[in-house]
Length: 89
Image (cartoon, rainbow, N blue to C red; front, side, top):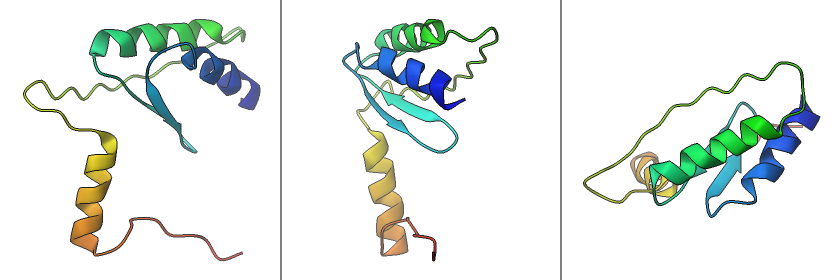
């Protein structure tokens, strides 16, 4: 699936959005939801496989501005550390 995901990620580079690829999904942020949907559609269409599944969950803050990094900082403040743990290798 790496090639398919790479095709989708390359399509996202054409948009004024931020994104983070994780092990299980890609988190997309933009100033407006229309741009998010346009980017998702372009990423979906960029995949050349015979079967493409795109799952979307939208969390839109309409009365205040908040970014994913703000949420991570909030959890870190409660934990008293960054919420990341490196595996022992």
